[in-house]
Every structure is written in C-alpha cells, then in structure tokens.
Image (cartoon, rainbow, N blue to C red; front, side, top):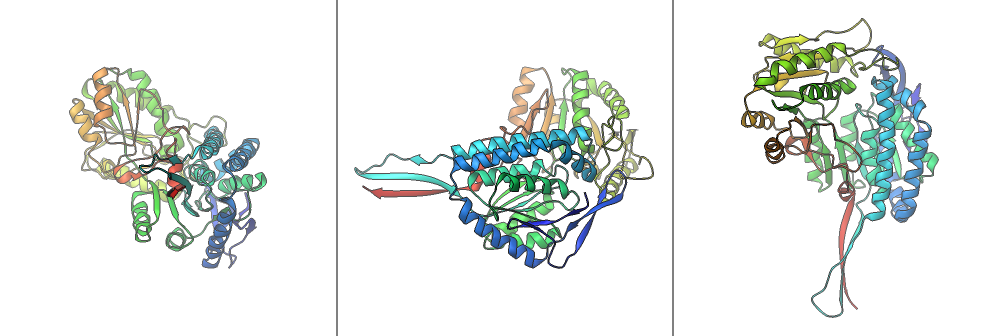
Amino acid sequence: MTETLLYIDGTWRKGAQGRAIDVLNPATGQKIGTVARAEVSDLEAAAAAAAKGFAQWRDVSAFERCKLIRRAADILRERLETVAKILTEEQGKPLAESRAELQGSADILDWFAEEGRRSYGQLIPARAKGVQQMAIREPVGPVAAFTPWNFPVSQVVRKLGAALAAGCSVILKAAEETPASPAALVQAFADAGLPAGVLNLVYGVPAEISNFLVPHPVVRKISFTGSVPVGKHLAAMAGQHMKRSTMELGGHAPAMVFDDADIEHASKTLAFSKFRNAGQVCVSPTRFLVQDKVHDEFVSRFTALAKAVKVGDGLAPDTQMGPMVSERRRAAVEELIEDAVSKGAKLETGGNRIGNSGFFLEPTVLSGVTSAMRIMNEEPFGPVALMIPLKDMDEIAAEANRLPYGLAAYAFTRGAKNLQQLAARVETGMLTINHLGLALPELPFGGMKDSGYGTEGGSEAIHAYLNTKFVTQLV
C-alpha cells in the first residue's frame, strides 16, 4: 500500500487540506503508507452524498440490491489473495487468518443480501369490516458506521451488509491503523456498480469524526464496534438526538473448564482461540475458570501449547501468531502483566517482547491471579491467558458474571446438568460449549450488559436498519 484516500460521492480524493496519517507495518514498525485525513468540509460532503445516495438506493428493489451485494462479494473473493496480503501488512495477523477473514466477509455479504429480500411486513386482521391494516418495513436512513482495526474487513461487512440490504446509505469511518483493506472492500462495491453516494469512506481523527457525524441531521442510525468507554459516549450522544444505535463493545470472556471435560480437547481448542490475532479479538477467552481437580493438568497442557506457538511476520508461511497492532497496544498489555506479577501472579510462560523490530509479544500464561489485579478487571486485548482454580458451578458462575461485561463465554463439560445450568446462569450474549461456534453469518452476534446491545448477525441483524410503519385504511 502507499496512499489510501477518502471515498466520497463515488470519487477517491484527498482530504480538503491534503493532510495524511502515517500507516505502519506492525511486524517491522516501519511506515508502509499514509491515509487521508478528513476535514469538516469532507465530512459535510460525505453527509450530503449519503443523503443523495439514500434517496436513490431506497427505491432500488430488494431483489436488485441483493444481486449487487452478491456481486461485490464475488469480486472480493476474486481479489482475496491481493487484499489478504494488504490486510496482513497493515494489521499483522497471519496470512491464513487474513484469508479466512475475507472469505468469511464475503459469506456475510451473501447472507445479508438474501436477508434483504425477506424483510417482510404484515397484514393485521382488522376489527371492523372494510378496514385494512398493514405494517410496512422501510429503511431507517443514512447510517454512520464506526469500525475497528482488529478485523478491518469483517467488522465492516457486518454493518455494511445489513445497511445496504435494508436500503440504507452508509458513511463508513474505518480504522486509521488499517485503512487499505476496507478501501479495497469499498472498491469492490464500486466495481459492482453501487451508485455514487450510497457508500462513503472517511478517515481522520476519530473523536472529530464521531462528534460531527453522530448528531448530524442526515444520519439516522449509528453502529459502533470498539471499546466500552467510547461506545458509552457514542450511545449517549446518539440518545440525545433520538437516533437508533447498535453497540458491539468489549468483553472479558470466561472460559469455563469442568472436571468432566476432555482436557486435551479443551486446551487445544482454547489455545487456538486465545492466540488468534494475538488475542486482539473482542470474544477472545481471557479468564480461564478451571475446576480444582483438573486445574494443574489444564494449565500444564495449555502452557505447553502457548510455548509452541510460532510468532513472526504474518507473511511468513509458518507464522501462527503475528505482532500486536501498535506499540501503544503492546505497552498497555505489558503494563497489565507487570501489575499482575507485582501483586503475586505467577508467570507460567511469556510476558516478554520478541526481537528488536515490530510490536511482538510472547504468548503469555498467568496463574495465581486475583480480582485485585487490573488484568482481571480490564479487558487485556492481547495474547494473555489468566488461570483461576475454582471449586464448583456456583463459584464458576459467580466469577463468570462478576464483571460488567457480557459478550462471549466458553465452556467445556460433558455433564448434562452442567450444560443446562450454563445456559441458564451465565450472563453473556454468546455461549459456545465444547467447540468454537461463534460468528457465523447466520448466528446472532452481540452482547449484553456493558458489552453493548443489538446483534450484527443472524436474522435479527437487519431489523436495526428498518423502521416499522403502520398504515390503515378504510376500503
């Protein structure tokens, strides 16, 4: 990549003042390009374009919208290898993970394209003769979508696919750390024939962009993926203007391992999930709540797997875990590890930087952690696993629910009673038991409590982009 531009009203352009932000390769720490910085005039132009695009796109039939979205998905598949390399260079994850993200993103677009054709209304039986009663579904309007750097394409399509399928236009504010891969997705839509103004892409200073777009009268819907503090701020701002919002925020996922579990299977499955994308995943397992009888065995097996993870440049064919996205993120995780160790946690493995270039951090396992440590209360968002021995279901459920987060949870058990109690007692938006079963296009994807509200997957996801209008008439 060299220079990523803004995309406004069907045209790639620099910001009004020509300013740009450097983009670094996290595997080397070196500059690999720039991204244009939007000014207020650029944002105003994007809002005007979105208003114009919405007026046109809402009148395109759901059938035709479906065909165009699926065409864009196919173009993304055709360009998969090129875009995957770009994604890895700017984000750091192994190339295999980038390919999987892009393939999954195309599948999400296919799913939403078809859901748009099934946004049914209702005919409601009337009480009086000659009265007709209808509930009609129509697009809510232009959408402001804010997406993160950890999954720079798949988090975009969860918002973009639903919005476009419903008939909405979009102003997309993607992450400055990873700008080129979302731009490649936008180009796929442009090449598929999406009318100018329906999709607009901006970058810049995040607070400036959100403070402009959220209250803007053109924007009627907000969708945000990111941290809890920023999500709460944007949700409050949206509420002041009576705007609908979807919030997919952070987590601190419990991974519950019971003494009747297949320990080998549990350790392998959870280690794979933990160190995917260097732990920079909102649903990454972080607190490993292990029943006393199997705690030592599980920690031993998991630690051995952590030590065996091959860390390196994501473009290298044998890399299993890449770098963290930035020096700031690495330093934040190191600070949490240091706090835990200073308060008595045992470093089973890891905790150190790797090499003299890039933002690498060893896969890390901590045991002997307590709730007095910051890492047990703040989302680590890095390659760190916290091991906690607990006695029984009551203790495990209590710890799982202790924090205000409620995005995802994992459990491994073969007991029927445990299975029933887990589903009933764990406060989480998503729970996967004995396997990794989250994030497929047809499944709900979202949290509860401080982890947000609304879903960005499954049959419900498109509803947030539709208004229900009631029409009754005497015929």
